[in-house]
Length: 182
Image (cartoon, rainbow, N blue to C red; front, side, top):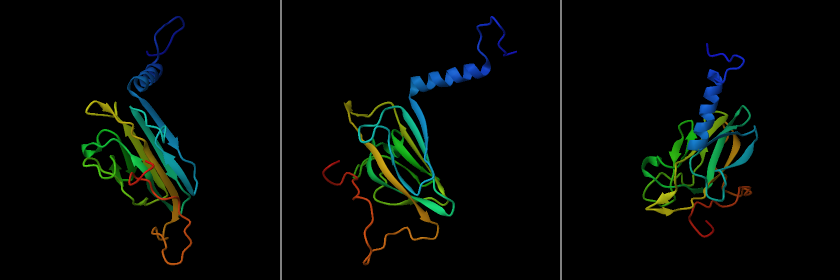
């Protein structure tokens, strides 16, 4: 039962499941997963960044750094649709480091601000979700999405920058919607 026989037009159980998943992803949006190679640092962006991100999108990035290190991540640009409890468009930083959405200074949402997210082990997962539209009161708002940088940090190394007399080897200043150029 459930096997194809010669001359039969019926699909097997696995084929039906595949077609159902394919149909569902085409009808309800795009699902993607982007494994990140084992590197000491890198950049992750929302789909289409810096152009507006697409509707109905679910993307996942798995960041893995070498054993003996932890992942330090921060957002340099963050512009997602704000919503109560971040239920519309959001990014989750896992393991349980938070769910974020909105814009800096927005009355709704949960903006990550200028802070570092540090994993407990050598892996971190980012999950991005966008709903069916980016409209507010009937007006289409072109949210840019996000730009994040990560780096491997020794487990027992300080995750705060040195201040006194240290050479500044940091990345360019954060652009979280505080000034021109956003």
